[in-house]
Length: 370
Image: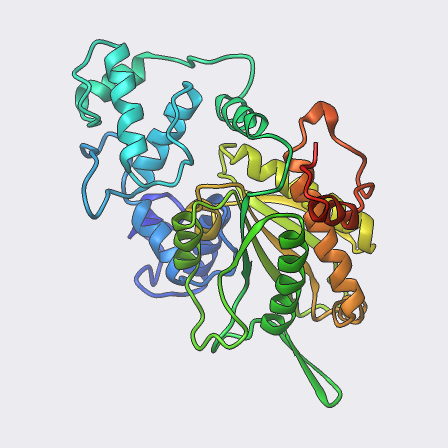
């Protein structure tokens, strides 16, 4: 059993082959360590993570396979090691793709090995001998920040994918309110439409991952692949939370990150900007930003965030969420955050100071924001 192999469940425990309370606690501990949603259930995402966790770096030879690339915890460990040494593997997504193979080949070339992009025993020995290569800052942070800086401050011509969560047969959180029935899927689609209009007015190409009448709920893997296929510059997933305790309330924003500190640098920055702008413009309780390794954040190749815009189960948040003017303010906050992400840090502006209507006016006049 994978959990026993990770020392999360004793192989000598009673009923080790049954999903009992001991197993649930072990699953929760595993989910916590991997940055997944901690619910104690083995859903599709947790199962994939458990399957990947079977592999330890050095246990097998890693290589770029087509069309089904190798995946596993060993691949992620290798990617994180290469990132720490300054090699560009992109995101540590646990997939041995062409970018990872090229980074391995570059490392092999520099240490005098045959640069075949395959991580076998000789490459592993070289990795174990060497320490950090880059000092003075996180290499990935420096690389991603430089790419943002070089792309310029304007929003015009960029591509943003907006992902209204759930949909189809999955309404998400559902709350009855007298004769009415509010669903997470409907509210976040309305919010996505408002955000789409404001971004488009600022010169952005916008794509939604679903319409209001989607028959089936798209898996997160498909949503991430759609954003990648469009070459999106930014990915924003919109959700509304729910909890058994009606006192739970507030907004939280998530970006890609792992338990050992590897993160999407630009995703982390965007999450912070989105969180601060929404809190400042709406008065929602600040539930802060958090790193997660969800498929939706792990598999996207651009700055990606998931925003939980309040709790539908909170009476206070519900009153806000069903108000169209509130959803307008949330949309404007996200537009302001996306714009600020492209400002050089030394030219950033105070939270809540960007007038989104001015961005629309500038675009309408045919000039570029500078």
